[in-house]
Amino acid sequence: MRKIFLFLAVLYNSILLSQTVLTTYPLDLKRIRENDQILNFENNSTHEVFVFVLYQGNFTVLKYNSALFLTDQFTGPATYFEDRSLMGYSFSEDGNPTLYWFSEEAKNIIIVKYYFESKTSKALKFEYPVKNQFIVTQYQKDNSFNFLTQDKTEPKLILYVFKNGIVEEKVLDFSPFTFSDRKTQPQTFNQILTENPIGKMEPGEYNPLPKTISKTKMYLLSDRILLTLDQNVKKTQLFDINLNNLEIKEKDFVQSLAKKGARSSNSYYHENKLYQINANEDELLFDVKDLDSQEVLKSIAVSKNDTILFKNSPLLIQRDNYSPKELKTTAKFLQHLAGLDMGISVFKNKKNLFITIGGISKATNQSFDGFYYPDIQTKTVFFESIWDKKLGFTTEKQQPLAVDKIYSFMDKHKEVALESIMKFKDYSILGYFDTTTKQYTMLKFTDGYN
Image (tube, rainbow, N blue to C red; front, side, top):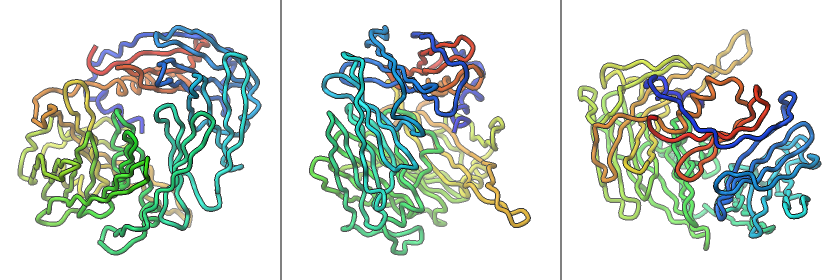
């Protein structure tokens, strides 16, 4: 995953990786252990920032105000966390945080609320029907903690929403709908999700190619979830899920028809538009459609003999962790792309849309003397495109995102441990334990050149 963020750092090696130290806090960690964890997170109502540190059988919770000044803290024994991983957090109306700890072995969640006023905590256990469901993903939204499960036999997703000490179960029933595989043969909803697990896209953030090549994507909106299925190369099957009344509406967005037939296709949702791509060795087709009307807002066709006029970077190929190399022709780019899992990512800053189009090779197994070993060699091809907000092409050069700088910083600084990244205001924060200075540090990173 990390190398994808490093593309720009490799291409633009003149980046000044300057960053601002926001705050530090001494931590007495003699050595890092397997179960040690640090997580920083924001109360979306008060914009206070909390840092939870689990280390050597104890925990410390740090509370910062919106200006990132330390205002409160408390420490205690890690009574409830043995052999558990931190799933997420929520905030009650009283402003106190609640953390959720999952055990793979016990198949349950320990819910711990921390009271800063009394420097105490209270724990509850949540049992979900593990025999019938398995966890798909989890996320925070509006200070609530949400985790999504899939029914093992029925075409249903179950969303559990935790807030203010109450859990609400929402069943999303897909039984009224029909599904098909790549060859347009009938397939069940559960078969599709088994072959193409749901990938959750992070709202308002750059989602890199390793995430966006997923054929099944989930997008979080206000009181809605969008679920897109792209296992059928001829169309994107989109489900608009209303979380208030649990109504599910289906829309099919047909892919543009390639002369030779698409070998790979995918889509990406961004701000009420669906961006669709499909390709073979001879051509690349790219459409932008309005989500409500399904009107085509922009349509681009590029043949192997054309120059891709809307690219703002070279056509690049990267193998494993080696530096990217330039592909000189569109034909060579399409030849590589057609055999890969293709994806598209769209990200917006205050001025422009940043679009990445590319593909990544599938992992395969190699057999030696009767034993199977994963083939971890990967091939990635991609290019970047920068549009204005009216979907017009620009000639601007891609500038590094804050996340590019963060991953480059971590690669160059081996003292970084137990790292956690969060979006805060209009910048990103890297929080980590500095093994040299023995302190927790928060650094500020912004988009663009410094």
